[in-house]
Length: 263
Ligand SMILES: [Zn+2]
Image (cartoon, rainbow, N blue to C red; front, side, top):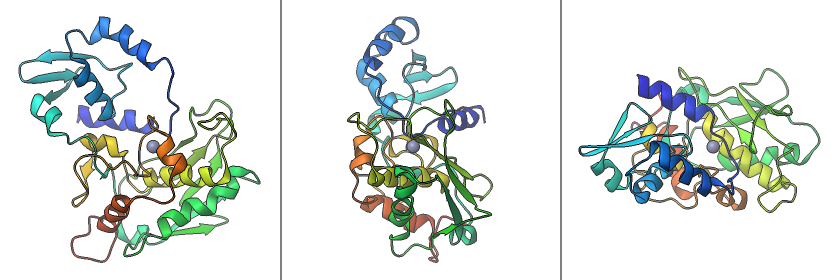
């Protein structure tokens, strides 16, 4: 339970976050304090699982590592390479997922103009019952701009709880693009699709460790997933579509078939 709480807190704070140029330096500094005697490849593996290595202590023990105080990760787990896979943290009830009302309260700006692309990227997936319906009032998911200082990075979503989709998505117009230019309409659409992914349950593909892996998606790397974390933001910025495994995952989560994961 404690692990569960930890992961929820951590994941709620995750969105598309900019890379920090001094991450290397931070990592070095923290190594001296809380990550002694831990091989760099282990630290890098933990980072790929979604741990923030600037804040996470790692203590070697027999057969594995105690991470962030109370999570034991075995050497086997680290070596199995299970750290990248479509996975979800919560899942929306099947009936709800077929009619998710989503409101564009972004206004007349690039993010607002990207809204339709964001919902289309999911609605265009065939053989899933997931449907996002744009509305002008009483939404299930409200999409609005963040207030100054409300979030860092480009966007933030919320995970579902008790079968109900996350209710809010924030987009941050003040965040420059990865090349320093303003984020384009199309890029905002991709970012919104990523955040919608969180609101319908998806973790980052690097964070399967915390959630439920979706059967039939590859163990290993999906370099094209729209649910790639902000540590590699160009994947989301440059996406032409959600990946084939994102599609496979959402079909498995939300469908009329017997093996669907929603309830
Ligand atoms: Zn995210």
